[in-house]
Amino acid sequence: MKTTSMIAAAAVAVTSLIASAETAAADFTLVRDEDTFRALVDGRELRRFGVRLEVHPDGRISGRGFGQTVTGTWGWSGNFFCRTLEWNTGSDPDNCQAVLRQDDTLRFVSDQGQGDHADFRLR
Image (cartoon, rainbow, N blue to C red):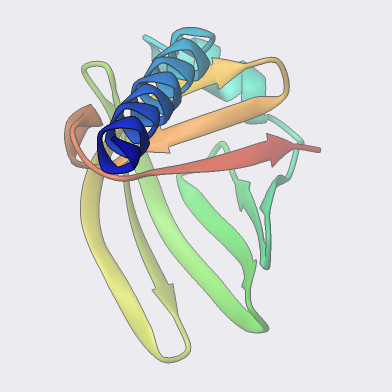
């Protein structure tokens, strides 16, 4: 009986976590065009733990990540933010990402919205 109760409790907990994640994602709205994206990032810094980036109007990306200088380029293609990044010890190849917004948070979802995501605060 105890094992059955524990499995049922675990199933309820997992279901609750999934529902919470779906609700959290539902609170974000898709940034669909370059003009809206530019208006959001113009003159602002994107921040997350250990990372501070600026997305410049001329297509450059600059900043710091965990003590290293970060540079890159960006453009807009269809509904996606496409960028490359380089830092002292490596690089991240071109990747087009869906951008979602919730208040002062931008969520970048790699692989045209199908991959991992990173949340940045606008400052």
